[in-house]
Image 1 (tube, helix red, strand yellow):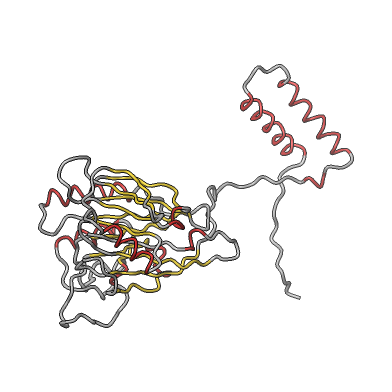
Image 2: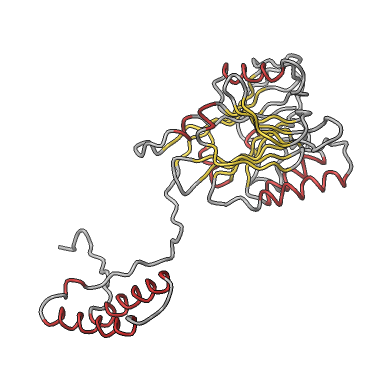
Length: 346
């Protein structure tokens, strides 16, 4: 099975004048990518739909490595170390997406994490590709999967854009009672056991299930209800940026699942690593006349004990810096910022 996502020039374009980025995330499901010609078909569909990232589930590949294709795409895949060729997840990157790749981590045959740079150096885009056990799997297998998924997710920085997508094998349905913050009423079918587990996971980690939010016309051939088990979830703090989630039925790679594309406008604010740290400012305008003499004498007295110190460079520099700061505080004093109204009562 397969799920795929697209990260377009919003990642590679780092021009400061462009603050809003267009981001498209794609989910798909295809079986047994190791079959002859399937990988070529997948890359052709990537080029056809101008996709930069394709996440794949149930690749049936073993081991966890990366390899470069002749067409230029980079494949990252994670599977079982040995034994039967089953399960497995992968991410295929275009040349443009490869330039924004920060790193990736293999987490067994069901989870693969890739991190990408954004236009803001303080915020990254983390994409977690998953292939969940089916609804018929044992409770032990499901619990083991969701425990591992939770351990990985809770390590992702909340400031980043965190995207979890793929074949969740979960029907969440249209009844969102108790899940109003993480899903809408546009889901298909009725929630099953996997759907409840998946919704609980999203609620715990502040994720929105994108496919349940936007209404679209039902164009299924027989007019019946189709299964909705491939999902794209985005951090809830970026919910307002989500523009649409739509199914595309034109892609063909021998699958009974359709292409799901989510589009949203991403505007990132500059992230401060130490927002509570206050920068010290001193009244340097007082350095004239007798103040200059007092400042020089006080600083010289503080430097004298340092002349014969036998310390490493870092320790010596720290003491020099402290000498300057303490002298400024004693002689000049800190500068107080006084707010001035831009317009007066008069």
